[in-house]
Length: 293
Ligand code: COA
Image 1: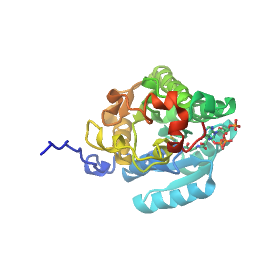
Image 2: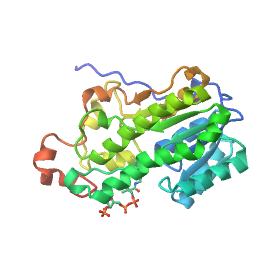
Image 3: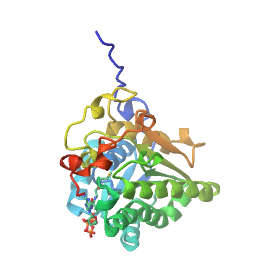
Image 4: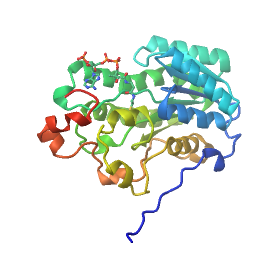
């Protein structure tokens, strides 16, 4: 019989970290209404933090805030804002200060993505993703930094691993996330002496998220199930655990770093689509893509 690959367990953060780690602390999370960032917020709340979740869709935010509070017993404020609009972010920050009085931790998580080759990414599409991911991160830092400084707090930016190599169909996000990584490094260096840390989490493919739904080819591909050094795809809990660690005092000496949480897939140079067919014969992969060519 063929040897079976070892599958690493999926563990809850509360089984490893103390549940009162972040008592009295406040998290401000863009993109916190859904997906990975909602999970990161839940983990912070399970360890004692109150949180503001920021996004474009108020009904989704309100629903998520209710769920998060019910699950964790902590307070969650839904604040509608578009990270592309600095004024709306400042308003979300003001509401947070009014309700909670402080901001200790910020997750810059709002992002946009779809699969498309350069020929299928219009100038406006490229600009849109740059505006959400890179400029949105900058706007979030600008809106929150005074409070994070006052609290001697920390930032986590949600990036990706796909720009470490040339990933076809990801020109917009590769450029945008490279910018996010650079922003975090400068933030760490400039704000370190003021007591602020800044790190990046770079998730690999994470099961059950909107991002994965947008990026995984429609046609099932076994590589998404089997070819992982740790034996499985990522789970939101994997990102949650990294978040709790990086915001905790255990990470006090870690700043300006990029932490891929991808089960080692970065080293496999994973491609979303068959290569080089996706580049040479785009029509042949069209049926696998939710976007346009
Ligand atoms: N392929 C190619 N171009 C696309 C596209 C796709 N699948 N989806 C959108 N675009 C283009 C649009 O056609 C438009 O360009 P145009 O004006 O030249 O036609 C441009 O992108 C902006 O799209 P629009 O829908 O007007 O912008 P938006 O602000 O409403 O949405 C997106 C932003 C495009 C990033 C959208 O995918 C989004 O809101 N994503 C948020 C959630 C998300 O992506 N989560 C996963 C994170 S990993």
